[in-house]
Length: 553
Image (cartoon, rainbow, N blue to C red; front, side, top):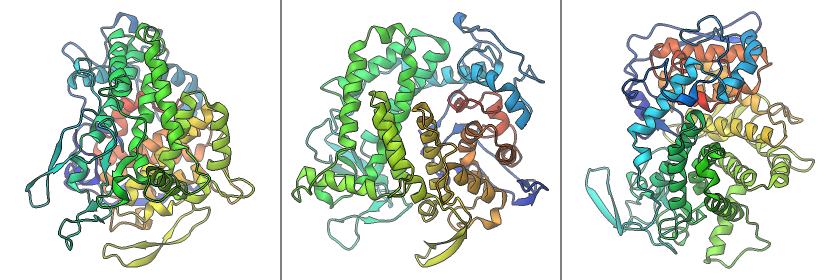
């Protein structure tokens, strides 16, 4: 699978056109641009975490037919262009058709767009031979791992030692050997520069694979009702989480290890490795009506036990500092680090522990965590206030030479993400986590969508800041690291904007701004691009099956 980075995305675009901004009379920013001289992209759909190649449709399949007898459900009158199944984007259309959209995304429609997306999904499952996969886990591990260093030489190292071969292991992404020491230890940080050694240990790939497999098998079952999808999902889950020989232990003690530090244990950043488990649970819960699920109560109970153990490990509190050098001490350090973090890693952590708590039935804990950690309290600022600026101002960052400088930022900016060497990438990551937290809170009966702190901080304000900067690229403060007028950078926010559209359906001004952003994708990339809004509305992007209800596609 291709690593999804801005560098890789840039390879697909030979030239990009400069963006220009204008302001309508109602104050809503819109975007225009010069025609690009040459824009080439691969027709793929990707988000910040998963980059899938769907392959071709199966022989005999097309966007207007499906061979599943149980997929022909009642259809609706869906607007001006029933042949392509697309809509004119407008605030009015969203209000008029919101119930239809809900029915479509719930599967209660035979609509062409939906069928196209499901056929793409089926082709992906087939091309990746997910149904034929032998069940797998992270154990037993190989004795060594190999990678190519910067000079191209192949390096072989012994596998990192842990307490059990069933322990998950990963190496810090941006840490490199110290050239001034004989053994390279301890490693040194180089933010934004990936050490190829960090991709050599297989556990992170295996974890990613199981989460992708279950998400797609769950979606496959939900939209086609083919029992084969559910049966394979349960077999894969049994091997990865329950089988004593192959299973993964329910902790991340050895995640994002920095070689030569922490006595071989991981650190708080390692919690972000587990973020993909949230999409696994999304897919798993779509299997609930299958016969295979009903027959596998042991898998369901075992999986809930596994996630309870992980949740308890991730929410452990210590009344006193453990003895230095012990396993508990390094766990304590991890927990202290994540509680002090105020960036996308903390957002990923909160999304996880809240998701796991909902899955195992800790509903009261979920509500309390949202109200006391995500929101402000009378005595402390919450996650949103610690991440998002209530007013325009200046923040200190480092330029490419490492020198500090101040940059102006609008209200809603996220300073910790803008300070990174890939600021747009990390802004998008955090936006996606915050939007998913909004959906999770909604499921728990808490409205984060419309929550605003006394200082004026909100998730919506963070969305508005990115929309403003996208419409006014000359005001983007981090061009030297990532240029927001570059289509490869500009487009990374598209899925967040689609989620945001469904989150605030009655905010006409926001909807117009989102419309401007997404319409610009077609201008920048061409309507035929797999990243374009036109392709999305035709069902050529699998994410149309999972975005928040109410989106005007």
